[in-house]
Every structure is written in structure tokens, then in C-alpha cells.
Length: 92
Image (cartoon, rainbow, N blue to C red; front, side, top):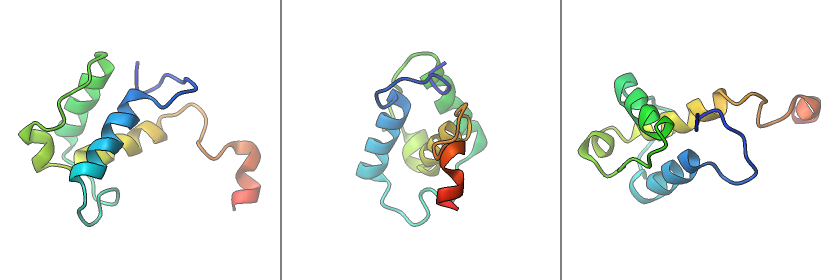
């Protein structure tokens, strides 16, 4: 699945979501506030189905926080943390 695969390049889910947020997401708390759970799951399903969803649909424009929430979900579900266990002491 796209949300759990690891590859050296930027995963499509992150690329699409960050580009969308940079273009449309200049709102307070874009990564702090959560989107509507059903919208996040719908968006996740579209990416998991190997599709690149149309993020300009009203459902995503009206709930822009679901796009930021999907990015956070991606990072939470990585098999290894972004800040690796080996470097944890240095970061803390």
C-alpha cells in the first residue's frame, strides 16, 4: 500500500498533499487541526488504490485539514520513525 511502502524518492501521497497544501492550505493550524475522519479515510483509500486523487474536489477544499491529517497519518504509520531510534538521544 502506498501509505506504508518505503522507497528512496518522495512518496506520491506526500508529494501530492504537500503541493496541495502549499497552494490552497494557507490557513491557521493546517497541521495542528484534524480533518474529518471520513474524509481522511476516503483520501487514504484513493491513494491506497494507486490513484492520484483530485484534491481540488469540494470535499477536500472544504476540509483542507484532512489533507494535512493524511500527511501526519503517513508519518505515524512508517515502520521506523523519521527521526530514527539511533538518533533519538541526539534529538532529545
